[in-house]
Length: 270
Ligand SMILES: NC(=O)c1ccc[n+]([C@@H]2O[C@H](COP(=O)([O-])OP(=O)(O)OC[C@H]3O[C@@H](n4cnc5c(N)ncnc54)[C@H](O)[C@@H]3O)[C@@H](O)[C@H]2O)c1
Image (cartoon, rainbow, N blue to C red; front, top):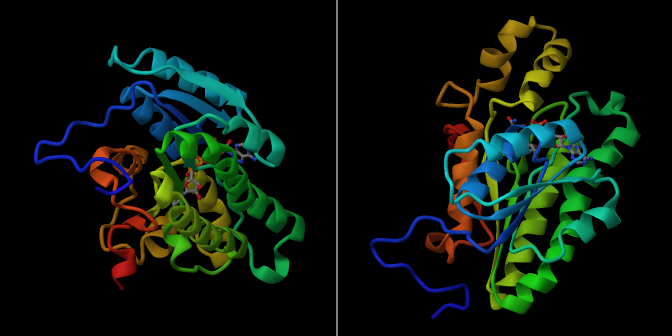
């Protein structure tokens, strides 16, 4: 039998994370919030990490009102991930780690502020490294762990004006694969989830920026810039991404490691 866990039969059980601790970064909003709620609904005790204290308070309230009485608790951890020591420390003792926090700046390379490039790489690549580093000792000790890195189509493809973001996501893909190779003998899987454009504040904030960079009105950005390469002409919902994350944490996915689960409406089929 694989060291990654028992292979489920034809009637595989639903995701059950009772007794597990899951850490989700960027949990105050968007995809991270959906992931925190999904994992809590599966019974996990969720460490919700974000720099946005008000957003975390809303998440805790939302989790408290959730209909599932079996749901695990959501604990807010107000951490700025540029504090790399704090990030590594927060991950100690977790069974499931979802590296999700991200930021974006849309600007041609010649105008891209070097300090922003540095911050994007810190939050989206170096912090995930430190969080994985902090989580692995406990995962290795118990012989089980799940690492899910929220990458993007931009982990696999480039787009103009997104140098830092594309560089960080391509780096995250490499980090994730390396963690998969090192973690396999210890029962730890590591994968990426790669959404196309998701209906979140990060995308809403981008519309004005993209309109300026491409010299078109904001209302044309969605159809002419964001969804041009997507065969399915809509944004992905955060809950759909959270479901992919949940799948990768479940028993059905114990043989799935070192790979990228793409939810891009056919973008990369081109
Ligand atoms: N929205 C999309 O279309 C899309 C598509 C593909 C991938 N993604 C990826 O999904 C992830 C989540 O994106 P989202 O759209 O939900 O974004 P979002 O802006 O809605 O949420 C990101 C969260 O990260 C937090 N965050 C940012 N910097 C932080 C820091 N230094 N320390 C702590 N927390 C910090 C923010 O406060 C926010 O709550 C990102 O990694 C993003 O790259 C998003």
